Length: 295
Image (cartoon, rainbow, N blue to C red):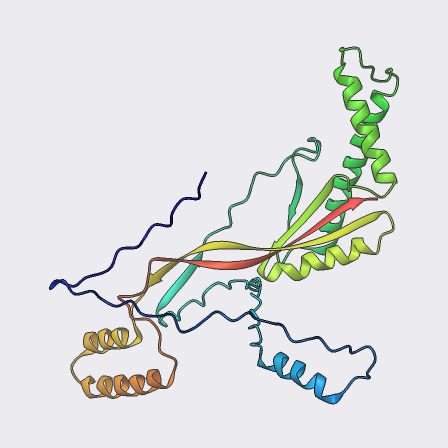
């Protein structure tokens, strides 16, 4: 079989029928030959050979360092202090209300009801000490009584039958063992005082801290109290009413006294106006609690 004949390409012609000459290819593809590598093992290192390497390294763009994201630091906790109360006018009287307190339990009640002793600034020292001692002795007697009453019973068994006396006995024994090992504290007597009575409460705590069989800890808190405000007559109004009832001869003296009173008030710190004075206001008190327990 004969090889297929090569297909002839058609000639390009213009619109008028003339042939368009084809452009001749002048640029021939030349084979690329790589330059021979020099054997650098026979020759020592030269200064010129390291120069292009350093130039290449310097010409390369240095990558930008990414900024490390700083972790948000926790903000310091600031204890908010109660706002300072505004100054009341001189003719305003403040009456304090008693603080709300829970009903005092009997000394023979269980440990579920805390034993609290409220102390005043004028309260005697020795009777308070005796009162705390009596409460501590009743607590110790109740603990020993609960252990002795259930000591004759058998131990608890996992048979699905629980006796209330056995449960109380196991709880009392575990509490006594924990107290002897220096663990959790037992039942405590709380001595509380606010304002001027804080000094007396701390004196009681220092006294029991010196005792060998007692353990003392101090707690600090704040309480809000409500005060009632009543407005009376101002000094200028009182003087004016007195002079007016006496006659018209002392009108000039009253005016002079009022002017002197105004000058003195300007020197003093500015207070609230009568219209802005509230009927009640909230006052914050500091409270100290001393917890006393037996070791």
